[in-house]
Image 1 (cartoon, rainbow, N blue to C red):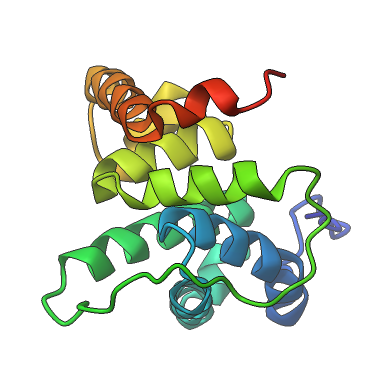
Image 2: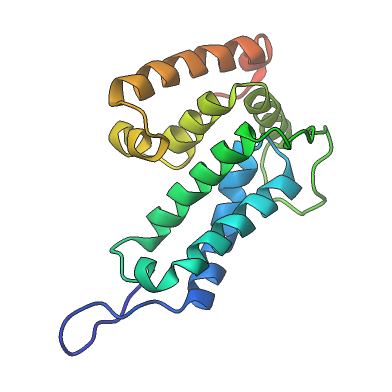
Length: 175
């Protein structure tokens, strides 16, 4: 997100509409991974995140990294949604009908199903660390865990993911 600077050298606030347009797809994509492939819930989480940001936009727009702040809000929104008793919707095997330029759709489906079987916190750690490419410290800050907690949870989550994938892991192409 580029910012312009005023003559005094301070950053000029971003326009919320421009910010939402630039970040919307990224938030939905990250939420899609967090929800284990539930496109509708992913859209709801991204919308709720943008709604929370809009209410505080004047302050958030002046932050050095409003996109990072939005990702953090998305993770908190996801975790609080999973804690609510009202969140009784079940993820199905059906995916949203969208065109994807994916070289290996079977791999994508297999990984999404495996992610969907992991506990919520484990899934959040894996998505932050490996999809969002965040450091251990950044992940710890977002999830309000210690750095060692992130490392151990990440290790256990990868073990669980390998266990869920089982023999399918051997069939996946190596990078």
